[in-house]
Image 1 (cartoon, rainbow, N blue to C red):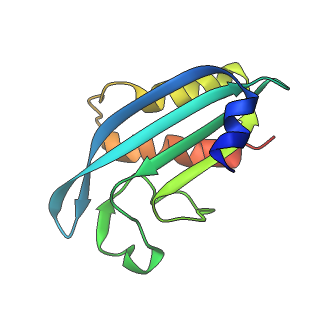
Image 2: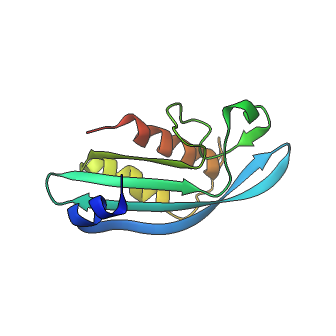
Length: 127
């Protein structure tokens, strides 16, 4: 969608942040920057979100990656960006806010994998 389309339909900015997660490729730690933008739309109770990644994830390189925030998303159109228009509910807001939260100490997984699962869950919602 074009930026002009989005500007004319934006009600409020829900979230605009940049976070860094620690991915892992071929046994090496790779810092991955995620830019997360989410706005509420003015014509219905909807959220338009975009998540941009500075390190691409390609399916052909899936075996090289031990940890990447886009590795759980099956419906990626781009190797560096995910986004959609989704219903504005408490659940979708909680997923978006948890994605932008400070890194958590995980006992069974990594923060990068946790954020990847959140991105995957968001990609399953649609409006």
